[in-house]
Length: 117
Image 1 (cartoon, rainbow, N blue to C red):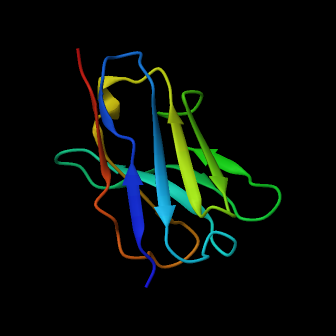
Image 2: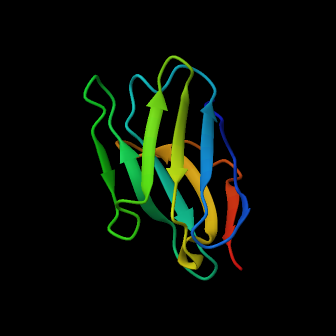
């Protein structure tokens, strides 16, 4: 079974930056569109960024992070990353990676991002 492991989270002040990484077991990235999701306390999980498979590697972002977050992938390494700049307290959440084009793989434990002064 595919396993997803997120890392790179931490505590950062408003305006700071973090880079998240997602590692997947198996060779799945060549066949799947990938995304980063987040879940804040008391809220449902939401998709914040996605990147399509294929040579085009088209990306999409939810309005709240557009211009601040950048998603990237390396199919050869089975990794997907999320560069987060100009972080806001509203970005505080547990961040997860998973596919977006099909049924989800089992969720990883996620990585906590806390934006606070």
